[in-house]
Image 1 (cartoon, helix red, strand yellow):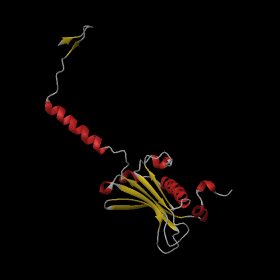
Image 2 (cartoon, rainbow, N blue to C red):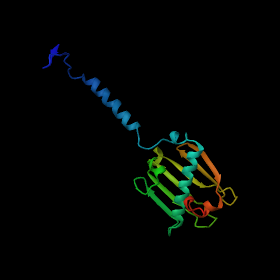
Image 3 (cartoon, rainbow, N blue to C red):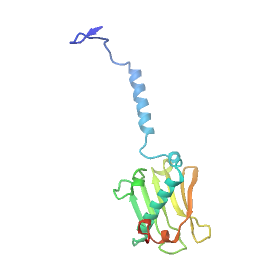
Image 4 (cartoon, rainbow, N blue to C red):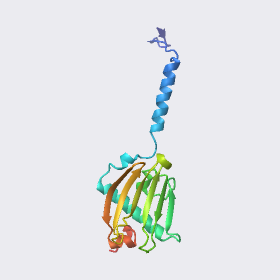
Amino acid sequence: MNTNKHGWEFAAVGAAPPIVAITVAIIGMVFLVSCSKYPSYQSFTCHDQNYYAKVAETCDELIFRASNSSTNQLIIWGNDPSLPPIFQELHPTRIWAFSNGGDTNYVSGVSIEFGVSREGWGIAWQQNDDGNGHLLWELSAGDEGQHTNLFSTEKPAWRRKRPPEEKTK
């Protein structure tokens, strides 16, 4: 036993054996690699319908912004401060909003991408092209081998023309 300057006894602690240090380092690296800043596909698919409705409404706002651009599309990178708060919380890699510009032969929608290539996954808000004039809109999430429809609605006429905050009183 050793004694400190206050007279307290303590056991001397030596260096950990190399195998212990290596094991701790490997466990730490596995933990850090598994803790991505991106939400997982599984965690996103566990929300309620109110949450998905808010995501869809925010997507509509981006489609409206895209419809006012000369190319009818809008690309927002995940680190852009103009990203709507609900999407900032998700930490996407990129968001692509596209508008049909009033041409019903093309669909409008939003694609939200997380990660890259096969390791990534995405969220889509788009018109279902089932021959009914693209009235049914669907929010879905997918990754390699999985695809889940999470929310769908027929958009009222005012939502097809302008974002929700510009509703007539």
